[in-house]
Length: 285
Figure (cartoon, rainbow, N blue to C red):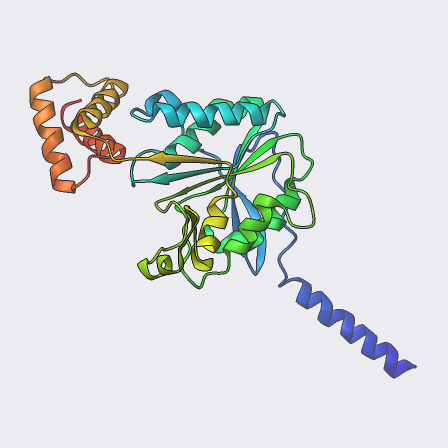
């Protein structure tokens, strides 16, 4: 009995030492004060990382995407009012304001209970766990997946599909997913996959490979397309940013410089317009 008692005491000492190396269970964020979080993996355990200084971009700062702003704003207001609303896929050209639009929604609607959770693609397998953490809370959560795309053999999109449509459990009432992507169907598309497409009495029937790719993006109730800006739209956005930055300028000189800037970058995007405005304001503001 004495040997057994000594063994138990040594075991307790060993466990006490091991406990000092095990990180404590992370505390959940206080969603009454925290407006946005990132989901992060630490020591093989997922946790919310509070974002204390969210992006302060405003909806009125985003120019050239009025139709897309109107659709996203309407859907978000329905969501905040506890009315039916859809998950949204914002897809299209780079630098056209897809991500900024979602960040601007938080800036406008945080006081109404809107919260943002950013989940990166490689952490999508944790989506069911993320949803469980906020299930039934009074706040309304948008799960933000930025620059989303999957490779041919990437299976992590299955977790996204289950949360979008629900698996055995019903999709949470207080969670929507807003994702941005340069790809309409989120997966690469190849010409040979269309060889299986059949024409049946005038109807187009896609092959299995194409159907699988379409099935993911179709789980988003709203598809919003973002296209490259033409020259006039690009210059309008530049003028809008310079006005926001309170910079005076000669229009002819600024126009020439802005077009040269876009030509050098090979892009007339909203991002290029903002970067030019920053550079111009830094020089002449």
